[in-house]
Image (cartoon, rainbow, N blue to C red; front, side):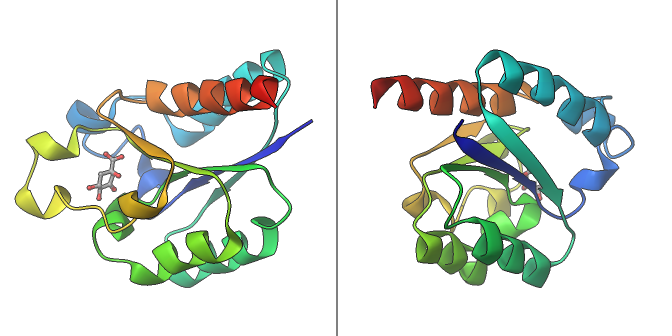
Length: 146
Ligand code: DQA
């Protein structure tokens, strides 16, 4: 079974409490439970990781990125700033989908630029939590194409 890493960056542990008008009322645990069900239906093996620390995210990708077949990442605000996270993803050479819950292009200007986007397969922006499920479908399809 292909292994897909689902990684959430800073402040996404606050889902459900954090600006619910933007990010919704569901918690990260609730989201992860739903994704677990979807992954089972799609025959994907998934592993979750969340950290507020740039270094921990990078270490996790180094440790797990070579063996896994896919990475779904919402880098939170590191999206806009972290060349180090970008280098970690390209360094392990893992097929990656970037997910943003909100439509970052309809928000503050600093959110319009992703330093991660140029090195990923694609990014899903503004579909709410559904973006994570869409990314899982993408990896399920990739698997059947092989
Ligand atoms: C976010 C958008 C980022 O700009 C923000 O810093 C986040 C969440 C999103 O999912 O919409 O933390 O990545």
